[in-house]
Image (tube, rainbow, N blue to C red):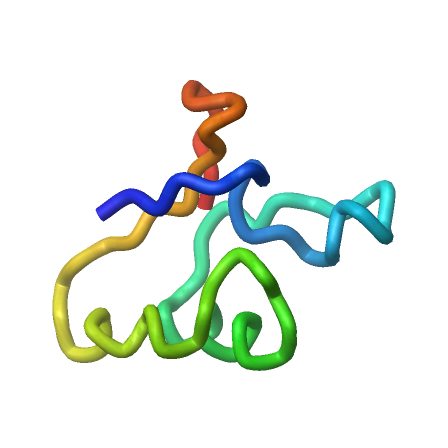
Length: 71
């Protein structure tokens, strides 16, 4: 499953506030849920519930740069 957003993926900080925010290339769904819970706007914490216990992968990619790898 691919989630298309206006950012290159899940970042270490809000790129609107932190100029050197870095892309997190890969993380477990629990880590993604925690990042979302603590304020990442790219994901809603409940959006990750269906991934629990499944082998489904979620890719967060940028619609502004679709060739970029994303998270």
